[in-house]
Structures are given as structure tokens and as C-alpha cells.
Length: 457
Image 1 (cartoon, rainbow, N blue to C red):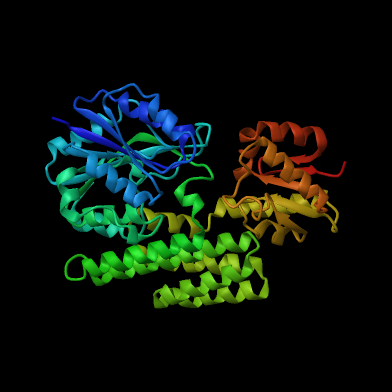
Image 2: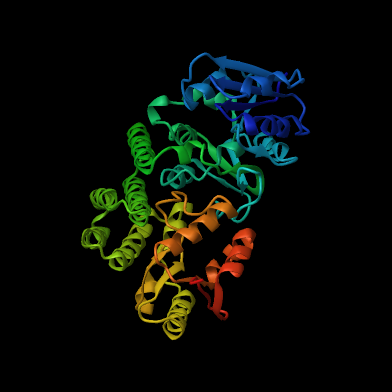
């Protein structure tokens, strides 16, 4: 009898698919099968599948692409395991990571779904900075608490999820109506409404970030629309049981915060009109206490006051975090809104150094994660580095892209580049960029707070 079916929906991920399948087949688990649904891929996916010489791998192919929700449902239709494990075609299991998740389900009948921490990697499989974990240690959340935590944001990486097949049959398959990037969250929420959720703090998979992922391929407006659709549908389903007034308020506050964060991304990318619209959307969704700050942020955006918008946004996020409550997303909002005295002191000292070593007419590029405070304190004109309009995800993909951004900064008249203590990791991560910078710019200041480079040749 099949114990676990590892289900892999695949669409044009031939470069990664073999690694995903091999990582599943390499798990020392008896009674394992791997189901791959090729959703009408037009790359080399068919060749990859044809080269897999293992009878445990079963394939399904769609003649036309029908989307990830339908592809996952096709995997389910073919799967025969007592448990269903999910793995995206561009991710990979870490060694010996499946058995511990199955063990939780075997010994805890009240747990219907187990997920785990994960590593973040780039397209080449190199480790990137991990995201904050859902919890510091292994934990099980009972139904009401699991639902309350999950309704604010999807903190589960699909490639770490293992579920009981009987519960999937009970709640139904993945819903295409949840949107292109919301069907997984919709499913986990429905499962959290009927069974406890387990979490393992030991990473179980490598989550690969690259331009072709579903999340990155979906624009911010589409992601927010999907989130609103998922929340509305699930709260409607649970209106007589789990959708308490506090839970509904937390869900709406989380949507408002996501709109506000999306507005910040749009503003730093130069899309001010979209940023204003998203901020006004956040105001409509916000609880009463947060609306004044959100509206002031919109007003600052309309005036082109980047610093004012930044400060009001942080005040609004603090108010929203209080309503979202003790959830992973609430903690993320609290971190985003917090005024770190040490960080603020670093910015103040760095600003003094800028004024000391640059002329008043200098134009400064600051690597401060799009925080405009340093330029404001330094009384210098300039811009954030890198240019968010050219890097929607925030950072260059490699050394070559980082160097190109540096040369573009020079061409646009920026005369100095400043790293503060918390962004000095750039010079380690982008080694080729560091070498180019050292060869083409002059280091004019270096202390524990900041590094200042003169870009003029």
C-alpha cells in the first residue's frame, strides 16, 4: 500500500524538475510514489520526465495549460497515498526531511497538516537569507488558533506541506476561483478549519526564488486581489463558527497592511499613481485607529513627500499590527514599524559623515533598503540604490546586474555611494561588484557606521 504520494505540478520548469524529483525519490520512506503533472509545458519537461527510470514516478500531462490549481487536482486524482506531500517543480526536498513530517501525522491523529521551515535559494541553488520562521520550535496549533494565525497571511511554503488524504477529500480539491496565486492558501485555510496544524522548525525544503515563480510572476495588484478573494470566501464559509469578530478584524487589518506594503513597493519603483491607489485601498480596509495615518501617508504620496510617506506608513503599520495580533504576519508588521534606536543613531552618525566628506551639491546614492531617512538627515539630494524601477524584487540577480546598476548611477549624475552597517552585506554577497567598485571608485570614509565611496572617476 502506498504510504505517501509526493505531488509535483510542473509548468515550464525543466531546468529544476529533475532535481525536485530526485530529492523526493531520495527520501528514505517506504511506500513512496511521485506524481508529476505536466501542465502543457513547452520547454524540455517531457524530456526530463522521459529520462526518469524509476517505476515510482507516475506522470499526467495536460494538452493545454489549465493552471496550478487544476494541475494539483490532477496529481490528487492519480495519487494513491494515505498522505499527500506537495513539492513545487522548482523547489527541492532537503535530505531526510519527509519522514519527520510523516511521523507527526502518524502519531498525532488530530493533526491534519504538517508544514516546516525552509531554506531560501536563488535560481542556481545558492543559499539566500532565510525568511523569519513561523515559530522558534516544533509546535502544534489547535483548530481555532491555527485558523486565526493563517487567515492573516499564508506563511506555509507549499513544498513543506504534508496532509492527510482523507481530509483533502473532505474539504475538496484546490479551487481555481481562489486566483492564480491564492489556491494553495485557500486549501490550507479550509484544512485549518477542520484539523490541527503541525509545524517543524527544522527546514524541510529549499524554496527557490527566480523570476518565473508564480508569486513573482503575479503583479502586486493581482496578488492582493487573490488575497482579498481568499479571505472573503473563507470568512463566509466560517461565519457561523471560526469567523469571530476579532478574527475578521485581524484578517481585514492584514489585508490593509498588505495593500500598504504594496504601495511602498510601488512608490519606490516610481509608480506613484498605483501607490496612491493602494494606500487609499488600505484606508478603506483599515480599522478606525489606523485610518488617519494611512490617509496622511496617501497625502504625502500625492505631494511627493517620500520621507513623510515613509513615517506615516510606519505609524499605520504599528496600528495595524496591534489588530493583526500575535501571528507571524503581525510580528512582521511590528518589525517593519518598530523604531530601532540603534539603527536611528547609526543613520544620524552616517548623515554627519556624509556632510563632512561631501560637498553640499553632491548627489548621494544610499543603500538603505529604500529608507529615505539618511538622505533627509544628510541634507543631500540623491536616490536610493539600487533603482527599484529596474529591480522589482529589490536586488540585482547577480554581480553583472549590480555592476550595471552602479554604472547607471554614475551616468545619471550620482557622485557618491553610501553603505550603512546593516547593508554592508552587499559587499560580501556581490563579490564581483565589490571588486569593480574598489577598482573604479575611491573609498573616502570607512567606519563601523558607514562606508562612503566617491564615484567620480
